[in-house]
Length: 178
Image (cartoon, rainbow, N blue to C red; front, top):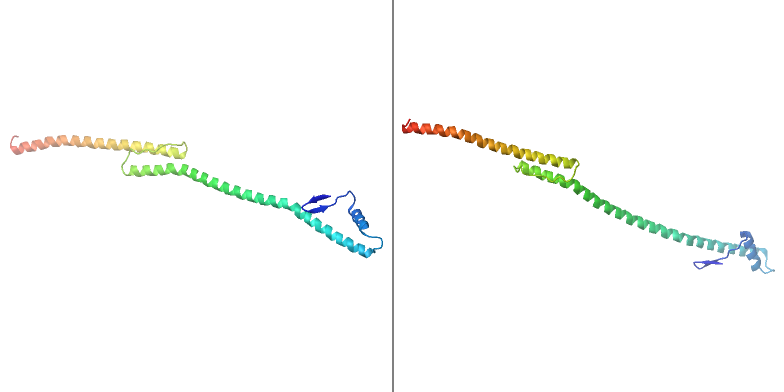
């Protein structure tokens, strides 16, 4: 006998028909008639059918438990993957956006006249090349602005000297010295 979940199942190495006849022969007294024997055989068949259904239900329990566990694990995995993806997306977006924001701030300050503005170069990609170009541009604009101021001061000095001489002659002429 094999016992599983409260159900006893007899196993023998004979065919199904032989088993049914052997059980039937042991149960029937000699004076019983064939119709009664067939009725008992039908009842025994229903009992066997019921036992078979219960065995199938018992066999499905581990499959159902495994399916529920797999569904739970896959849901947890999907949530974890989504969270990791969101964190990585935020981090990578900051790697791209932060240098661009620094460039925008730098261009605003240069447009306001602060030519000493520089941007940190952190990479060697297109954004890094743009930051290097911005720094060179800012340096050249600062140098050009310095040269312009120096040239304006030189021109003002050069114009001031002859004007001072002319003003001195005019003053001398008024005073009658010349």
